[in-house]
Image (spheres, rainbow, N blue to C red):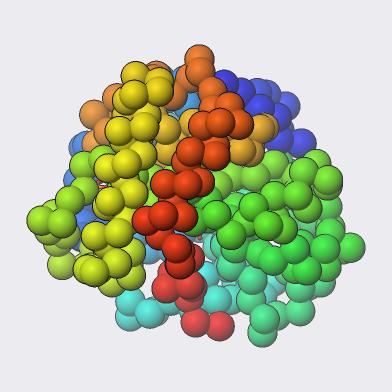
Length: 327
Ligand SMILES: NC(=O)c1ccc[n+]([C@@H]2O[C@H](COP(=O)([O-])OP(=O)(O)OC[C@H]3O[C@@H](n4cnc5c(N)ncnc54)[C@H](OP(=O)(O)O)[C@@H]3O)[C@@H](O)[C@H]2O)c1
């Protein structure tokens, strides 16, 4: 495992974090609690010490499962617990709400579900244009002063939003989408964060499984699985993404003796330098490729080759706009 630092968190943080969105079940066609707990424990035993969750993942369920796994693991002080706030749900509909009252309510609920006294990293899930950003920033700062959170993070923010937020409250991390196929943040968020000393947590490291090497044209996703509506998973576009996966896999084998899943993780780790890749898993065996992601790196020639494969197969890449909750 490789480690990095997040300001305000007084221990090294693993550069691969376990993402627990799918463990929540909603948008992923359901989940299995036993497997989920085993996965979290496997991650912790494999050197991962950052677990990323959110109240909206399974409408509280993901946080509850993380809380149970933490109790079983025992060593709470060795784990960096990251959760989020600012999304409200009702009757299966999600909307943004980062008002001070909503954040307070969410914080107390998250502490209970996670069964912890303090959250290590508390992230604003999406910007909420209906609440003045100053109010949101002041509220998160208050939580920090009260000792209920250690570090503040932003997620799905633009550099303009990050600049505005930082004028009211310092923050320590930012969480944009980042994987071989979703690279928009390289243009602005990456350099901005590097200059400001902000740690990046890139989400959807495997592009929702597309880069695992185990998804094919015949793969069927269950009802309610987000990949049924994710534009990257629809033909004919999906054919082009899969062609890229095949070429990336061949390149990884030939050049490094690895597979596409390792290349996908290594790419993020090398590009982010001291940032973190969030890898979603809900079965322990999905973490088996982890150890082969370390001890090697991508040189300039490899990056050129990878960019060539991507631009040949996917001349017009698309982002994660379909994920954005209504404002
Ligand atoms: N801040 C935000 O708005 C935001 C948005 C999205 C994600 N995130 C965070 O980032 C984390 C990771 O992103 P993600 O969950 O969207 O996607 P991901 O990490 O790109 O992919 C996760 C999925 O890929 C499949 N997978 C993982 N390892 C595999 C393996 N070794 N072999 C085969 N399949 C494998 C699994 O799907 P199956 O189990 O179906 O096979 C898994 O659920 C999330 O859990 C969450 O913590 C944050």
